[in-house]
Image 1 (cartoon, rainbow, N blue to C red):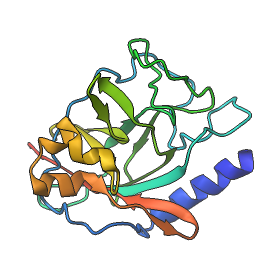
Image 2 (image 1 turned 60 degrees about the vertical axis):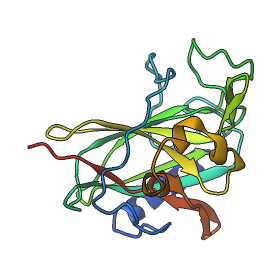
Image 3 (image 1 turned 45 degrees about the horizontal axis):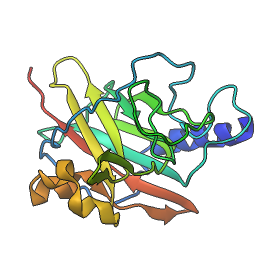
Length: 213
């Protein structure tokens, strides 16, 4: 497990040199649409909040689910990179369950999944996470939310942004009330195409935030 984590963080250093591979930078200079934070933002600190959600400190096994790598840049409205921004992600595990006391989903939690991670962007505005594709879950009796990952971007001098990232090709995307409330351009900016890059399922999610001073 330690060796696996070491290889991952080494790949993060490589990503920091600019070798970000994924979908096109179609979101350039257009503010990424804000979306609801949802009711399951983490409220309890956890021991491990690093960028590798697949292996949790103290766990003997990796999390269940298909592993993905999410790379991207945080930019301002002038397309300039934003270094030192705090990037947080949180999500459900493979079963669609959040690690939150108010989640009514009867699905089981994954004791080996981290659920929440955070990082600081480098001087080029880049970030990197390794996680799993979350499961879909029922929002109501007639509405099932597609797999998605929540993002929060925070840095002094910029408007805080909370948004969600979706997976291209997911059939539930078509009927999701939150995603479908966006314009076609906005939807293209939050739906990410994941491709196999050196045997790793990798997607690029650039996020543009508003500089206010």
